[in-house]
Image: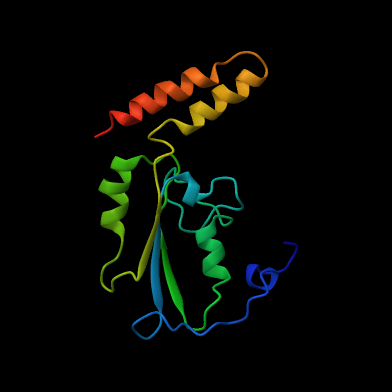
Length: 148
């Protein structure tokens, strides 16, 4: 984006927040797996803990920086690379502040549960002749159908 903010590139101006039923700030949380954490999508995010690999280029920090609405906003960025559904349920959801409560919680989950990275690797290896993409997809689709 070469020095321009997301709001400038989208042509947006400060929009009055008419949907939040209370005075600012608008409070939100971003939880889930690497789709939200954004590993490799910029510098490490200041909220990083352990091996979560949260990046400043993920959509959550970008929205925090380029918030299109007037009024303050506050994010709790809890997404963690390699998280599966049990980790989100056991670790991230309980860490969402509820005093004051969040207005919105955004979630991505499931890629690690179905072995998305292994499927992609197998499919890419298939392109050079040393993997079977269909077998890997069928294995993980079956595995996911058995998931509680």
